[in-house]
Length: 160
Image (cartoon, rainbow, N blue to C red; front, top):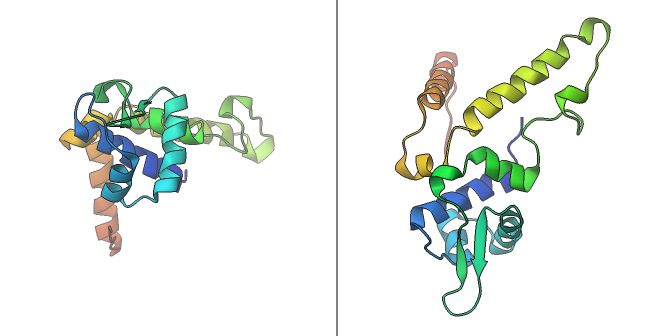
């Protein structure tokens, strides 16, 4: 699975709103500056998040955006689905809709496994987890395993 720039920016924007506190209004320009997201791109994302009932927008004096639900009730999966659709599909189809023949027949099960593993992580991590920097145990396990594999292979990753 490829995490799009749109999904990445949406999750980061939602984390900013969650960090602002319960019901706090945050201007799009402030979110954009804090996360290094172009404001016009962010406004489109915030519009989609509003349509998905994940954020509320307020106009007038003190205008801004706020979470529509508590940070504990919004998962990363919710945010990704709001801006990019289903977590895992193949050629625009759900694995349920796929059929393969011959030597490729087991591939459908692979796609189910991919979908399940994505959901296992993305549906468990909430915005509150991000703000508290306390990820669920299974997420920490997979992140540590990946990091150990990179070190074992002699690969280094840079984060900017």
